[in-house]
Length: 194
Figure: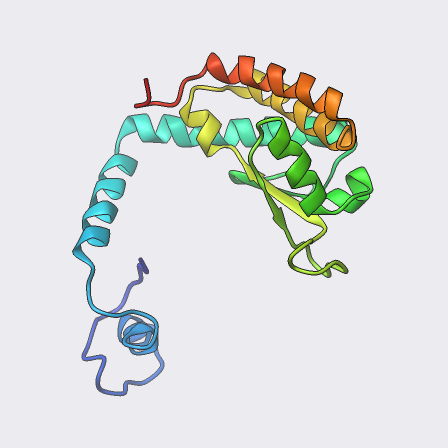
């Protein structure tokens, strides 16, 4: 979804490149090359999502996502992790695994997956490693915030991330961490799943 100001016109006719014509210019760039016809299921889902985002509860939830992200980022940095942006101002963070753990992002992703922490390998700026095995990992806070985890819980999660990354070759330690992560997660059930 692209929101803009200006006056929508006929996307089949060329217009001057002005702010007033921005909606038409965007339409001409996006359709039909990047977008086909309307998909009513996507439009309905977007309407529901916007309706939820307009509630007071969502605003509280969004603020908690940010608090959790800041707590997670701070705890990771305290433990010696190199975050690409030296913190976060949104729900995401990107860790340079080579500088933080002496290993690539793929190896760290696989180790953390073994303990029950899901995140993904990710390239970093000026990455010297290939895209299929990049230097970083990317993680965020919305999923666990949805489950009710607060800043205190995210500090624990940071600890498991660091321990799991450092113990990536120690299967016994990884099993121990997996049990701790599982016990923690059972305290915060996934909404809608019994």
